[in-house]
Image (cartoon, rainbow, N blue to C red; front, side, top):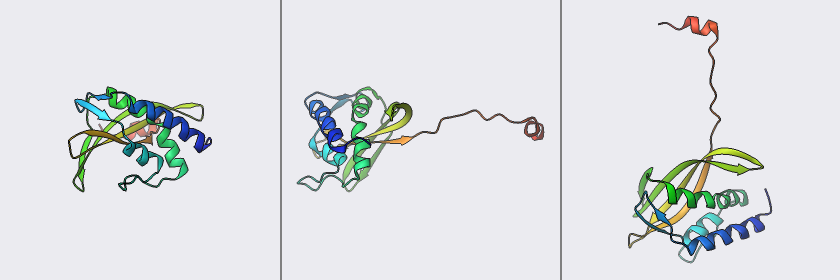
Amino acid sequence: MPNIKIAKQKAWEFYNKWRQEATYSPALKCNVRISLKGWNHLAGNIDHEGYGKKRTASDAYRRLMLLPYAKGIIEKSTTIQNIITKNGRTFYGIEAMVIVKEDGKELPRKVRVVLIEDAAGNKIFYSVMDKKQRQLSLIKLSNNTRNNIKK
């Protein structure tokens, strides 16, 4: 893992620039706010309202590196995969399969973006995470197995 301070600084530069842009979500049919709430949650900071989550350096790094993918998923996805209400707050999940560059390799990942709805109904970017996907391979049945399958 590269230097976390350098990675965090580069991610902050991307995030801060993103905060200045309008980000429209076709899935939600509205603009999504990019705020410090999302940054604190990803980076492992706790803000003055108690939002955020302590994270290990490797978890924070992985999530921060997914920020450009999160932006693209919000702007391109037309489907909300799930909606959850927890403690009076509504969370929206948007997912996509993307090719993520990791350790010089391009690997398939399922990336989930989480948006939260505030009291005024605004949608706010909250989190991004990934899940490694196994490479699909074809399984060839041997002649013995094929012969044992009843028709």
